[in-house]
Image (cartoon, rainbow, N blue to C red):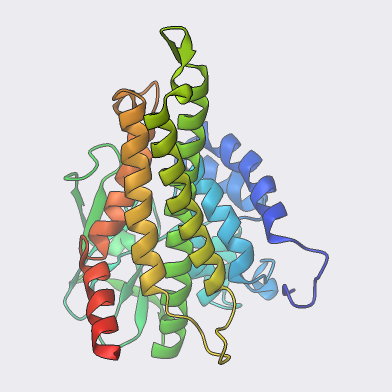
Amino acid sequence: MSSDNDSDLKPEEFGQAAAAAINDAQARGFREAGQVLANAGLCGVCASEEAGGLGLGTDFALPIVAEAGKLRLQWPLLETILVAKALGDSPLAAELASGERVATWALQGSLQDKFAGQARHAKQSDCALVADGQGGAALVDLASVEIQEDAALDAEYPQAWLVLDNAKVLATLDAVAFGALQRDSHILIAGLVNGAAEGALNTTAEYMATRVQFGRPLSAKQAVRHLLARMRLLQEASNAGIQRLLADDEFGGMRATAPVLANALGNAAFVLEKSIHLHGGMGFTWEVPLHYALREVRKFDAAFGSGALARQVGRDFIQSV
């Protein structure tokens, strides 16, 4: 099944359907949540049909991960979707699509270095994708590695570092397959953080419209309106950039993903921080849990070097002209 042949399928409808499953999964334990997401077809949306997936393109996964960001899902749905797609029609892909296994992705380090990190939900997952240090990647069994959690950015849902000295390799990807997967990951990570910002902006706009001070809603204040307008502008700019990545450029080539990802990370952090500000700091409480979304954005930014991605995009542009 593909988006080219199934013109009746619309990606945005997948996002709407995903919201119900994600909301259901939020109230369940990690393994049970995985089954809920898999039964709704979310884990295998891009997986091969031979592996029990839907065989759809990245454009169908994008609204799903955006909803996951918007609803602050604490489960590695993005990583499981990508790894299940990359493994083709293998039994491992089928296990990921069915929710029997859960995958994460260590965005730093490599198997060659015997150390990899910035993996989400590693202690609860079954396997992790790591670069092999030679252009490709390996899927390793997390039961065979030492997991060191790093709570610097998030004490509740910490990133993890993996000691890979005795790692058992379950599957490998060549350089071509891993390169394509990295491109997909940039698009979906940008979609996830953009979704997180969208959720925060909607919450903030509603709060500003209903919170009354001195006889007027806060949204009546010009300074608040200006800030909300700027937040919406950045949000729409990120969304437009992400959507452009799904289409070829004017020369028929693929567009570069790094500028869009860097922009989405920066814009999402701004929108979330201003949302917390406009809530009067309540975004740091469990009553208005915007801090969870901000932590996810910051963790992804750290995985790409804490601003290093944007600096590299700038250097590449200067060199290109």
